[in-house]
Every structure is written in structure tokens, then in C-alpha cells.
View 1 (cartoon, chains in turn orange, yellow):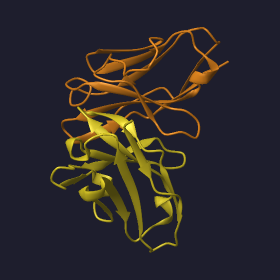
View 2 (cartoon, rainbow over the protein chains, first blue to last red; view 1 turned 120 degrees about the horizontal axis):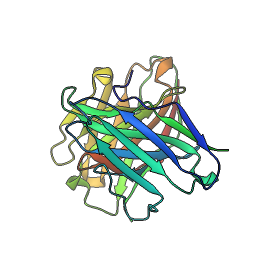
View 3 (cartoon, rainbow over the protein chains, first blue to last red; view 1 turned 90 degrees about the horizontal axis):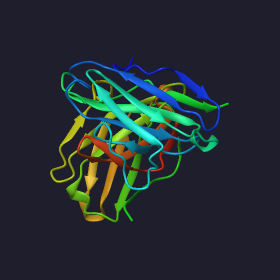
View 4 (cartoon, each protein chain N blue to C red; view 1 turned 180 degrees about the horizontal axis):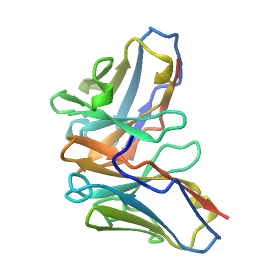
Amino acid sequence: QSVLTQPPSVSAAPRQKVTISCSGRNSNIGNNSVSWYQQLPGAAPKLLIYENEKRPSGIPDRFSGSKSGTSATLGITGLQTGDEADYYCGVWDSSLIGYVFGTGTKVTAL
Amino acid sequence: QEQLVQSGSELKKPGASVRVSCKASGYTFTSYAMNWVRLAPGRGLEWMGWIETNSGSPTYAQDFRGRFVFSLDTSVATAYLQINNLQVNDSAVYYCARVNFHCMDVWGRGTTVTV
């Protein structure tokens, strides 16, 4: 059972916006940087956001990240069918002394 | 470019062992630690642990202590995951992923292990 909670699924029409929440604790999100990963069907996960809000080279600015207290949020604007994937938050947990992933969220473009 | 190339799918019987390889290229192998991550059917990503590539020192997540072994061959820039005494519920896709300041920025394509 993950210590990071995400909604199982979110959906929106193409070109709309979705947000995915990631709820944790002081020992993880509260004191460490959050990353977000996108896993397209049949593919390996890909780093989408690091250090709470930064995008690696090549990631479009439709994807954004934020953090407040013990929660983090991934936003996707201008939703495309190609964004349909599973999304995971991830962060170091200082109490567990290990990395933890969120429960994962499936994004669907209706 | 920086990439991690993993070995192919494996089909094993319960009780056997399997070794998954992860060959790095395009960067200095010993400059970044290597994570191992599992994706089992119906479950999300699970962090298995990591290995420091400059020392070979492994760290295992709680659920992966005992039968799982991380190792290296720095002469060929390759990390290995060995799973001993395979069980049916070890069937999963196993990924290696480069550690970069507490995120995983380069991933292998995954190796499917079926028990």
C-alpha cells in the first residue's frame, strides 16, 4: 500500500485541463522534491516533472507541477488523446529511507 | 544519447533464478546510481531499491530484501538484477532507471519476467 495517494482516474474532453493530486506526509512530500512520471500504454515510464515544478528538456509546457505542504499537483492543459496514460508521483521518504511512488492515476481524454 | 538497454523477456519455473541486465551508454556509468522498479499486474510502480555505481553498495526496499540481488559490472557499464527462488507473484515488468538528484531521469524499456 503506497504512502502517496492519487485518484485512480481523471478524465476530460480534448483541449480541456485535468489536474492530478498526490497526497503524502511530512516525511515525503513535506520535506522533499516531488517528481511526476508518465507511462504510456506498453511503454516505460518517462520523467515529466522534477523538483516539484521543473520540466526536462522536450516536455511541453502543457504539463506543470506544483507543491503545497504535503500535497503535490500535476496539471495538463490542452489535453490530447496522446496524453492518455498512467501518471505517477514519486518522492523520497525520509522516514522509510526509500523512494515511494503514488498509487497512479489513469488519464482519459473523453 | 543517454540510454539504458535491458535484456529480453524471461520465462522461468517457480524456484528458479533469473538475471536481468541493464546496459548504460551515452554517459559516465559510475556518475549516477541505478534504481530498480517493478510493475506487477494490477499494481502500480514499486521502488525496489538502488545500487551506487561508484561503490557497488546496494540498498533494498523493505519488500525486496532477501531474494533480490543488485550487482554491477562497471567494465561494461551494466547493472544486474537477480531474483532467486522465483515465485509466481514475481511475474512483472522490471525496469532500471538512472538516479539523478532524487528523480529517475533515464529509464530502460523494461524486462518482462514470467514465472
